[in-house]
Length: 424
Ligand code: PLP
Image 1 (cartoon, protein in one colour):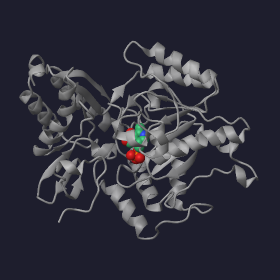
Image 2 (cartoon, rainbow, N blue to C red):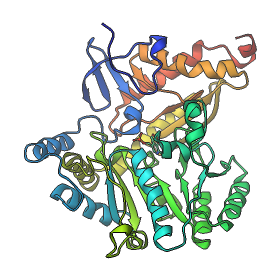
Image 3 (cartoon, rainbow, N blue to C red):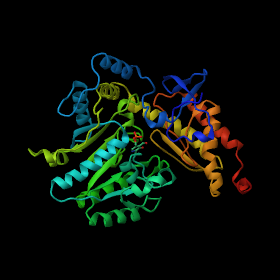
Image 4 (tube, helix red, strand yellow):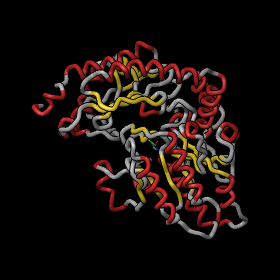
């Protein structure tokens, strides 16, 4: 019987194999048919310390033995209190208020609602959001509205709200981005929402920290709120705990999810400054922050996040990240020599490059073919169009890294060379 499961971002009509995982550990996924796969993309960028980190799993088990979901409107519990205290301690100073939700998308929805609520409660309603071209902030209607428009959201576009878009700063074009932001800010938008340093799902596109710092400066000068979506970049992915750190930038609102629980269980937070919290503070119930979901601040998920923070505190996570970066750089240098590889790049633990150029039929086909090829060799990668990227758990060993880059290289070796592409 065919499975009743309807998978995300999966065209069931193609009949592609759907491996069934029965066990996970470290950088590995074990399937029912006895195969082992290297999880070279950290299961959609969530797994930071490795699958089933013993401290995270123990925290989940311990908490699950004594409490489950608790209404969070007007109630609280120790795992959430401890987590909020620790986040407020380690995140940049003005970010002192922690609002919980369940996914990256909802952390962004919450951020947008906080920004609009801030202006509304101050009696100066503002509704326009400025975003960067090629951005991705989730698949809810709000998340899609502030993200790039494309084939993946075409049917829903009539329902998406308008945003102001500033161009992605291609190399040497930072000024155009900054000029566009300056112009938008003169119209008093509510906020700028950006993915700091890396546009993830938009193609692992990097931009310089100096530009992020300039964008922050322009927002502050015009009193426009600055929202950093660190759902992907947070928890060390770019080499530092937050990508914003590299630009010396402190946002007004910060979105975190994915690695917040080390990737074990869903949880997200949206952190805000005192000014934003206090704009909602009143004896008038009509000014409260109107957002919730049934599973807000699930205690078991909060316990997993507390264990993640303990790992960051007690273990040499930063050293592991730096070492993984160095080891990946060697592979990237080798990959960069291949004639089909374009724009090879690395930031922290994220390595990306484009494959091929020109012919759109080739560019459309290369990603899915590479994905299947790697899968047959026991490696999970999932190129974005013709952009191949590797973003492994920090615990990955040399053998698994070799297997990952070995699969990409073996694929490239079989491909027609640039000159032959037009005959492809
Ligand atoms: N924001 C960014 C920058 C992301 O990369 C993602 C997911 O990839 C999201 C938001 C949405 O997160 P989720 O898939 O957990 O809803």
